[in-house]
Length: 500
Ligand code: GLU
Image (cartoon, rainbow, N blue to C red; front, side, top):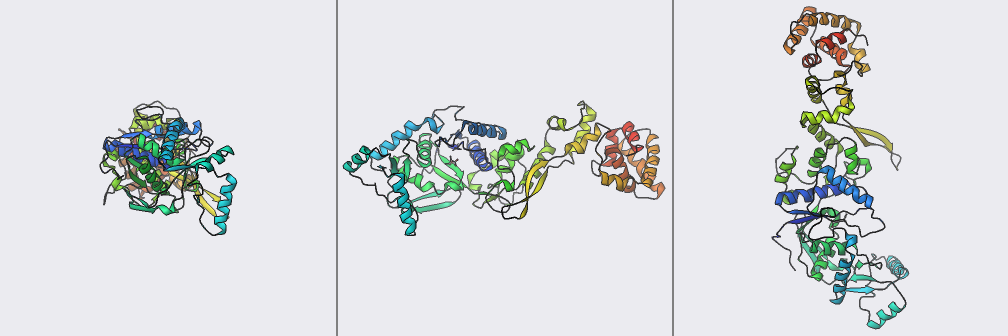
């Protein structure tokens, strides 16, 4: 059987196991499948791989739907959507696997093996003693009918093992190029367990084939399974899909992605104020890039769909960096439609009516918004102190509350530095000049402030910093003249004479 060179129509799948939260790596795989399907006008199938009935859980399945919905990853077929190739939960397909396993036994590609757990343990121990790698020794490969009947009579449980042929298994991976495994490296692996449930490799191949999956796009940890799966495709007489194994996702220190590098649960990011568009954009660039010399970082969903190809997925491990995610989040916050942004930050601010004043104020404050990563020091198992990212802070309450209340937060150090006795005296002179202005515009305000600085023989900055402190309690913010204009004469005059 050869690899299908021009697979049509394009059908891809994401096949998560509902055994834990929605991991960043799972989300990246789902996203790449989604982008590829959307780019090529193909279909995306969601298949829930819940064959491990002990570890699978409907709550975790819900978390998958929640994570996909948050990221905006819609699927064409799946447990909820239905489709022509269902059911889409493996736990509902056991009879299908059973049937194909029987076929493999009938055609001699698989066999029942009756070893007890004790016998398998002894096999492993003997191999360990002989310094050999553990593998099934093929003892029940060629049982006679009498032997089988005898084992059955003993009421022994049996598993179905695949009879690995001689030769090699190789494929042209879209990401990794040619990959070859020698079959001698593979032992006769189990395809059906004694409880009648299929193993991952078997269920995966049966389903990918029956669901007519054209491209298997999954994480690099799948590479070791692929030779087993290729052997199964051939034995079952199914056409072989194309494979693309996405590079590993690592933390900033190039170790396996874990809590030390930030949350690994996608929904935690939602709960910490990361926007789904920022996450979508960030995940898309973990292992994929738009092309040589293209430094664009921010893409709309449509741009990503348009540009995404599997050929541009790299082999090198991708680094998950929360600082970059925070940076992208900042850019998205700045670029959001203002009305949406106001709805987003409203709960952080004192109550206000969404009028022109509020809109202008929030728009001005937004220019300075930043998503910061909050780092916490922890002592690791080796007794070393390390910093781990625990949260994000977009700090909008502090950046903008002063537009809506006089009772705003004041940066103490800044106040001590800028609101000195001398500065206060100058502010009262500034106040008098501002009070006398016939119009309240940026130009008029700037003229008054610079004029006073000239008259006093000081730099404008010596009036600007104290003014900013007095009217906003902050050392940073929108341009001072713009800020004073937005706040309006009444607030400004009130605050300039206020004692902190
Ligand atoms: N259920 C497998 C996993 O979650 C799927 C691997 C694959 O895509 O084939 O790792």
